[in-house]
Image 1 (cartoon, rainbow, N blue to C red):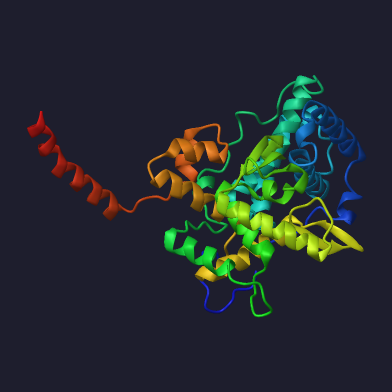
Image 2 (image 1 turned 180 degrees about the vertical axis):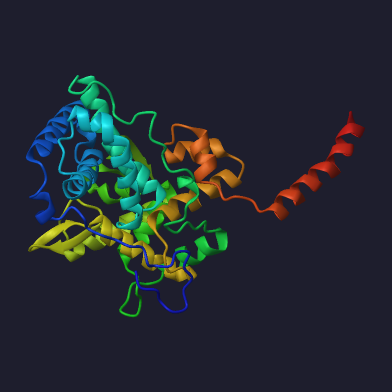
Length: 353
């Protein structure tokens, strides 16, 4: 991503993106590896139909990288070859993790996720008794500190910035305005609901319930079905937007649309991400991303003193996830200030007793 003058960035914009599993490399992969991995995918997709086009599509892309890697660096061994698994698998995996870091430019978290994709395959193979045991379970150390590594930007917007974006996007739509109706709606729905980009992408008119102020039954992360709520303010914008769409003759079920292949279709996640990055420019941020809106909203709610509501809006299973990853960390000065305030109140409380 090219940096624009006058905007602030948390990342250097020099992340190395390498497409390794090319068509030419895949053609050299041991055909038995492709066949056995397809067996794994069929089995997992039957068990988990809701995520067959998300989680397992990603896992397949990760496994393709691994199969290309062993084709070029480890004699293209069969994934279920017991001798190789017993004698060399730890070396294979450690060298692969180093390859992902140095050659592919992957961060710690991505490397750990790619290792998990391989591990999932071997868990399945062991359960099916295709191999004696998982070849590196409890033997391979994952990279530590993955959660602390900053490869992508993380911004927590506060009320003045939130208001500035909301006001800027609400301005009249004209030729001088660099933002349009869809930008305004993307921001308001994403902020109201703290939804993930995958849910925002799937919003459709057929799921819209204006009476309840919600998009119902939206498929989200790992196939989870959730509702995406919005405020009365956003409801008014949606109603204006729908009337405008009808006047323009825009006929498609997707809430966020593009014109492609001679007809109206759903806007891609990439296009939504680009629009959100442009929205960040309103407050001087050059590497703003969808998850920053989610974090800002949940942090706002939690700071108001109700982390339980933040957890529920986020659809988190654990309160720990909300508090650890979606709340802005206090600096030491702020912590000490609160401690001093607490100490000052303590004698007063004792006097009352």
